[in-house]
Length: 456
Image (cartoon, rainbow, N blue to C red):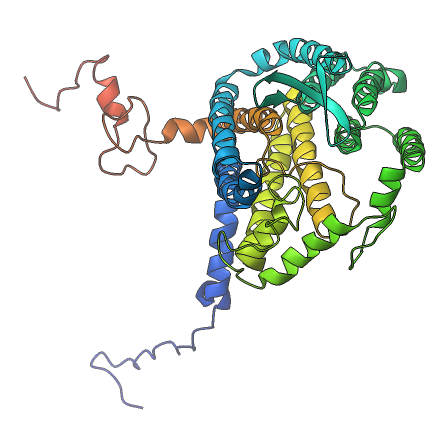
């Protein structure tokens, strides 16, 4: 063996082993998944989903209301943009309500619970007064405001039930009373039945179903035991069956589930079948905005209850799936806000609003698809109707306020810098990027500058 100059044998180098493959880091799909998961778990994800999702749904709804209502307006000898202008005005007012609700503190929301409930009950009683209440499509649920403007108080009853119930359950939870069934049910269930009774006096079964869904959602969030939950559900189901059996109109709607051809007689499935025709003729990408055929008098309520069918015909499967994805994102964000908060009022209010919007969207879309009976409820934030849009946008403002109020979200918002203008003092970025205000810059005004060592 050859030796070195020192007489010692040369040291042999370590044998290099082939580098092991690391698919978790090199796999692009894995990186996309990790980045998406990291972005999904950020503190402001729910805030952006609620604000962005509701904005996109409202804007797309305005576009579809304009497209779906033109023919109906012309048939009524009105300008083609008549319904669009009214919906745009309601959206502007609703946007103001959304901004106000999103900036209000939680204690002010709780303070408004009882006045909103009292006002909703008062207006719902006025609906039944002859000469004040109006009947639209067989339902006595409207009050005329003069001219072509009307209001449906039952839509505000949804918001009233959510706020009042959330405040009631939060106060009882603070006193450890929700473990007793009588405190969980009273006065929540009697008050909800009062609202349901006033709504059913006008014959609006669809809105009553939404209020029932809100009630069960609140009971589930409050931790109602299974036997209590099943008992209340049985009572509600029994009353629902009686109301359906005693109404030929509701029985006819129930008979139209899954219908593929219009029928004559008691079960007239014209609207349900033409809704399916509109969805089927849209294809993947639709016939284009304004190119719907069913809205030319074939599809009743094209711009209100069945606007989803016109969306499928003009924007195709891609448009309808986009709408479903936006509502799914909105529902997820609401559940996330309700699940991450420590405030019981925020949890109940966020859960109630999420139940309200998702249940109403499911009932409306299910009726258009022929999977559920036609309940006559609009698609939230999307269908034409100012009475439905205003309280819904206020409820979205609630969710935005709750999402901003999370501790992690507040910290993230405090670190966010304005894109233009003067930077906020005190908002220090942890990564030390150029242009961010430094902590020592703000402290220098309060403490004398330290001299270097040896300076005289």
